[in-house]
Length: 477
Picture 1 (cartoon, rainbow, N blue to C red):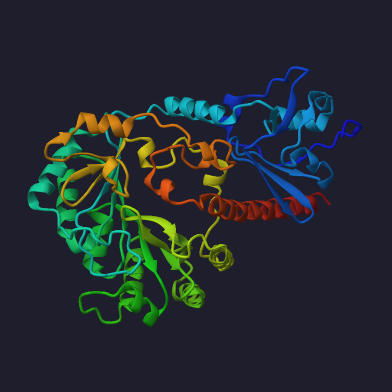
Picture 2: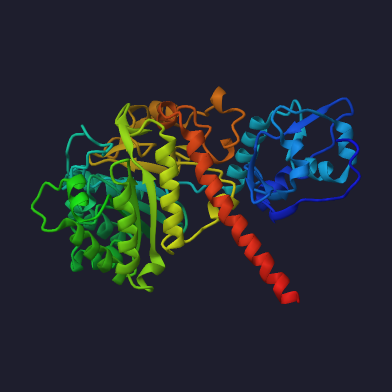
């Protein structure tokens, strides 16, 4: 490869996250006796005769001609002299090639820590997940909360929750955000109403979202959700059309035509300006039903209603471990995940899944609520405090009545390392290094899931780039 004399520089589809690129800067040339290799953070996707390179740390996207792909063959080492050529020198400067002994996981952690410091996280808690109840009017067979004690937040706990929020409010005019969860939150909508009224009386500015099965909304509650509870979006789950939906949700109370009731709720919410995200839970038994649901949603909602209606499919997770949604129902079935990708592609073509490149183009300094426990907390229906919304016992650190246990907090907030199996994983920069994560310790199929999701998004980026390129060429003629 040393005899290359051309200056063919790869096309840049996206220049990367400006924060990450600025902090990393151009990579310094290695010593002459050093060999270089492909960065472990480069994901390669072959698409329509070219290779798309995505750097998961810098988020930069390049398009490489096939004749140069040898630079990214696994386990290949090259002498530093190849950097005398323009192409490998450019790839090296942009961190797509690195010195053989480069400890990239350390680079990732250092970059993340710098970004966290620059963000200057506010003093006080800004994000709450609150369970006004663990009671639900449905009995979904896949619910990860099976086995939990059914409990509605008491009046005393509502008062203690309000006091806790006020005592930990952020300084200045910083808003807080509340995610109402359950159980089914509307099985205790009076608790939601009381907490929101208390926040208003105390002058606490906030925004909110909710996860709900959508079966209990009335015109009055939809209006309350928008005006009194400040809810901006609600996630609702559909598992199929009429009969299939009813069979899977297994509502406990008499509910005439539950599928129609949920669709009516979605219309009511959209009429109040609340965004609706529809999650389609998929397993091997309802694949055909899910396509029917997509077609139904496309025809049921007006173009105006669909402006804030987003639909996506996700494989069902089975209950395993400490009540966590830790392992796919089909134990890592590649076939099922491929079908989920097909469904999501179909949803996108129907205009029900607007492509948002934000997550793809942006390096995330925080993966989940546990990586910033000083700003995030879950309050369950009994007033217990957790640093993780899966509520594992090792993430419990107090309650709203007696406050935060310092010893438990020290355990929750203790620095974490990177698991050995994740050190050189290409997806480490947009996953989590949290080595006590209860989901990650149980779920070993994360690589395949991340790969499928990323490649789908990269194909969309490639398509958009080519369309824009063709349009520019047309305008120049």
